[in-house]
Length: 333
View (cartoon, rainbow, N blue to C red):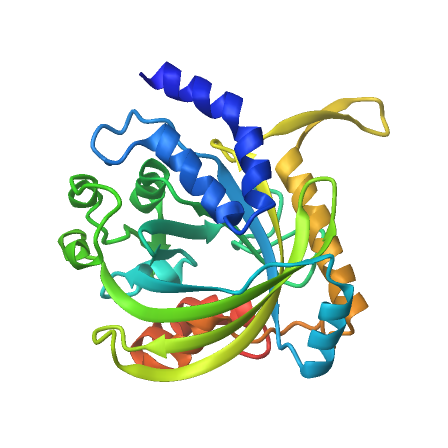
């Protein structure tokens, strides 16, 4: 059965991706279809094939009326506004988010955003990039199938102040025993609990296309709801981001041979090359839009960090203690 699923996935992937990306279904919808084909509907039996990984390269900024006008004038395409509701999950000690791992339920789907791995020769930290000194550019892998999410939750570790390394307190066997997609109310068996509930109305402006991806701006109008009482509206927020996405395959590692100046053939990570190009393209877009302070070592808070800063002081203190806020926000933290 697995070979048949793999055959269907390999033959249909390009067609499905093209149709989805040119419609309202979008890239997220494309990944959900792939998950259905290759992943099945249950987490039991982890021999299932893993769905492709998408790398998201993004930078947050405040969208003033002047900048929005420029975006609207330069957009090649404007997607109809969509509204979605996210429930973010973490442990009682906030150990996932301290490591920049963000597990969320969006509708009936689950997504795990985790920092993109860098080579040992590069500076440590999930958002470190050799081509950009600004660590406020976020570079995430996004996984949407159960097998990949569980694998990463099972292996992520956190370093305590005494230098010792402990496993994140997520009961992955208990999570694996649940039918996928999981239900939020069942996640406590795996020691995962809601830490934020966020509704987003998003308008996406497609600005330009590169050989590997399209670059767009997402303008979000956000509403915050109480993590425990989902009907309790807490506040609102507006934020924008410029984003590029790269699909790198299920193993998240693709290499090509590149001839060096000395004539030697060296292996280069093609996803990393695309990643570097995407960062440069993002800054060019921001400069063209006239966004001020695009290269400064600071960044506005994204919607989840804004939620935590306003309504979850214990969570905020945990992120400060871990150094995550300084790494992500720079001088603004």
